[in-house]
Image (cartoon, rainbow, N blue to C red):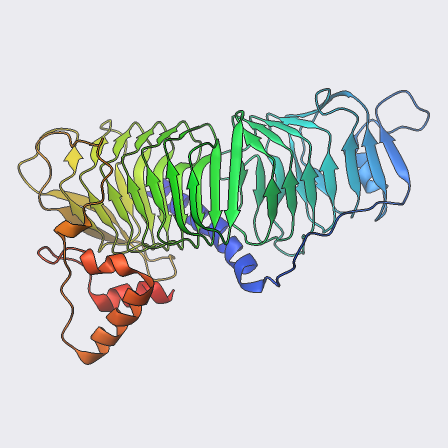
Length: 431
């Protein structure tokens, strides 16, 4: 119980940090390109007066200076803190190696290029009490960095940063923030696809996919492994994640944050920490997917009125299968490891609308579990099987009609089994 609550709390903490960036952004047309005309401080090499530690050079630098790091293996036990607006340049990205630690940027207008960064926490831009925008991370090799909640490059509560020409291996980008510039990066040799304010796109070649404020994007036929997060949707609607394989992602295979009316179907989701994570996401359909050996197959936080149907959940006895931060999600026809004759109860915790304590027990029910594994090869949407009952009060009808304007698939949610009321739907939508 305590470990579960701690896990929920840490996830919410990290995502709530990103809410600040969403609410406080001022739009610019292009990033600020850094130009450093100050002094140059040298680390490594044979020059007289060169520093031996990167942190020492940063501490003695001033805004506008450049720290130049010669080839070498820099084994570090402590995080490098960049608190000056400077450029940090490696002599050669293959042979200038920062090993076992990471870099934390806590000011604006920092540039980092020309390094291999490996076996640590990567590069973090996560200002809490300071401001850090307009940074550039370019031309690096980033290998086996990050942990459960931290990516190889993590950007939270920060905007107008440029992430370009980096190669990620066994890790990926974690970017729950708007108005950044991400291009020409690869994850495990495949393109890192980043789209913001895009619509009507089809993605069939990627090592990681990040969608920000997008509409009608199809992600299909990908194998996304060791990317930290395979597919990230932030503020997206009407997107389709179909026929993909999500494997060995240290955080989650699929993450939806404040994303509604999306379809996840026909995917194989295997050996991830969290198979699918929803936060503040409603009216989505999870259908005909195969889950196996994830620590949590589904992790739903502050997310109501999603339809989870015809999936195959295969799990070990000691692994919790469903954790729901909200009840009032709809489960139907799922296969739960073995044939079931009786309804399946999905236990979770009921939080308040802000996701904080109290964590009260709650439950959803799969009233008609499958007696044999479902066929997951078909990716055809089956919305036509369902309808929804509209409440008969004038106020509720007005709320429902407002929702239909944004989420047309809501028309097709089930009416025959218990489901959340439109009043509850409207409350979730207003968050």
